[in-house]
Each structure stands twice: as structure tokens, then as C-alpha cells.
Image (cartoon, rainbow, N blue to C red; front, side, top):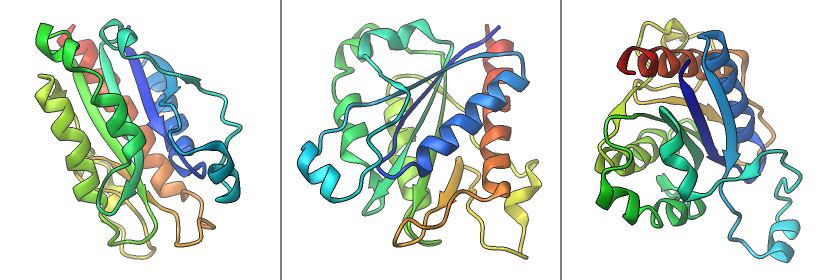
Length: 198
């Protein structure tokens, strides 16, 4: 049974919802998912004034726990077409793991949320994937065998590089059924790939 960490940062709950869907996909494949989030770096007063979702259930992750998983799926919202600083700050602490090759050969994957269709989904996924590749991880994306990302009848996220959702500029749009299905598909594929590599 593949042990899979779903590691995320979510300011408004969109990425959190995608993380839960990825964990569901891991379970579908017989894997053992753990959902953790990275610490919020925005001062609490400012976060509350910006209406951040601060009541998230997931515990805060530690760098030290990462080697205990067979796969790590990383998700965060985009900030100007790149990984959110909260997630970057977490990965900036993993130099010791990189030096020991502690994550080499493990499965890695990425997912994200943007305000708009063209808000930097793919560049954000690549900014996450770059960190995972530097750690020597084997990357699993969201292949086109997930037919949902080929839809033309609705606005939807999704990329061969990872599951995505579109939140809307005011955050009012929640992940669609298609986007949740994409996240679940990717979670399942991550668990299946990790089990094959074990």
C-alpha cells in the first residue's frame, strides 16, 4: 500500500478541496493518504482582513516527515504565475533532504488553483515540479486519459502537468465536478505509480 502525502497551501479553500479529492483518488487505488498543509506566513490580522480560510482541518507538515512517504503531491494557489510563497518557504527548508537524496526515486505530483483560465496554471505547476525534480522525484501528471480536460462545453481547469481549478477573481467559483474528478484521477494514478515502483 503506497503511503501518499498530499501537501498543500490554500488561502481560500479551493486548493484544500482539490487536496481532499486527490486523497480520495489515492484511497480509490488502495493507497494510504495523509493530508497536511504548510504553515501560513501571512500575519493573522492581515489574513483575517483578507478573509483567508483559517479553520482548515489538516495539520501543519514538517520537513522531517517527508521521507516517510512513497509519494508527495504538492498543491498551492498561484501567485503571479508561480508557486505561492508559503509553499516555497516550506521547500526552501528541504536542503538537508536534497543533500542526502532522501526523496530520490519517490513519486511527486503537482496541482494548483488560479483566479482565471489564463492565470498561470501551467507555470505554477512547473514551479512546483522543478522543486520535486531537484529532489530526484519521479513526476506524475494528469494525462489525457483523463478525458475531462478535453471538454469544450464548460470552463474547466486541467493540464497534462497536474490537476487545476479556476477560482474566479473574487474566489466565488468552487472546483467543478470535472476539476474534482481530475484531482481524483491524478491521486489514483500517483498511488498506482508509487505501488509499482515500490
